Image (cartoon, rainbow, N blue to C red):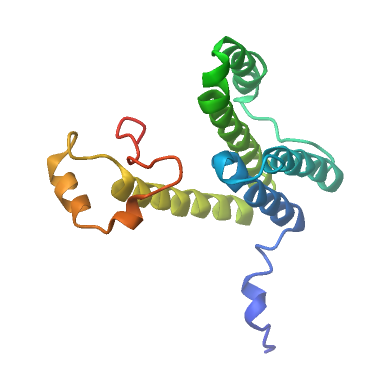
Length: 183
């Protein structure tokens, strides 16, 4: 019997196209989610990282994306409705609110196609995508629980959140707390 070592359990999960794609997504996320905290070049640099992810996928896998039933609705949303919404918003609000939300939507679109493409390639990557979805959802739920303005919506949670230190609740872009309706 041979000892395969501690890395033998990790090798089935290691997939270079998936790892590089995920790393590019992670590197692009902070500047797209919080553009006001970064220098002006960070947002175009992050969008370039997202484009490099698509080019990397094409070079390593031979295709840009895996076809899904959501392709046409997403193309309509991002090809027509997102430009129309940016055009229709007044210039001061466009810079302050619309563009930062558009950056987040573009990043989420890239995340969707990264997960859809890689999770259909191998069953291990599908399980890894499901685990990532569960962990990410729990993290978002935890941040939402302690960062939302609950006192008016759910009084019991408001009294619980009041016991937490205020530094936990000060998130970038949500100085007054996360809106309960968005949660």
